[in-house]
Length: 165
Image (cartoon, rainbow, N blue to C red; front, side, top):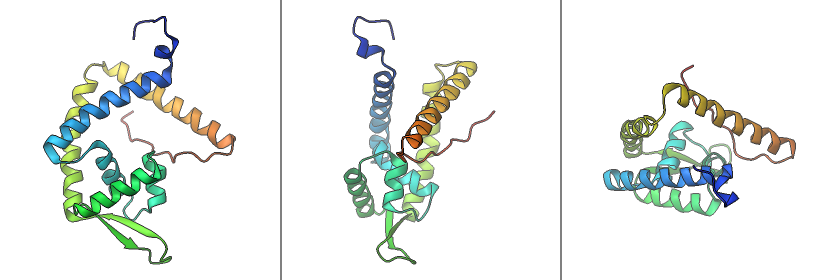
């Protein structure tokens, strides 16, 4: 981004939010047109696929979404037949989330298409730039997570991506 007389446009958090919103908007439009789900729906489905049986509180922690938003998303995905809720075996107050067969199929199909979309976006960067970009994101994330823990805030659980070296 070119330098500006407006400092807000230079703040990292603003720039990351802008990139995130642009990326989510493009992704949501694609996924809604092709699969009938939003990027947030997919985030929930993919996290349930990552940890079958996870609780709503764990999903909130991993998804970085608000509790009410996650509850609404889960209810809608259950109505669509993509997710199921099951009462916890050890604690009946606990609800565990699982993908349905249709949900598993949706996750698989959207990953295949999503990988293609992500590769197209990241093709803007050279291989060296992409490695540097990923290292910087990981380093900044780790720093902020450590600061949050040191301050007594648990924050979001870290889900480390698997990357080629």
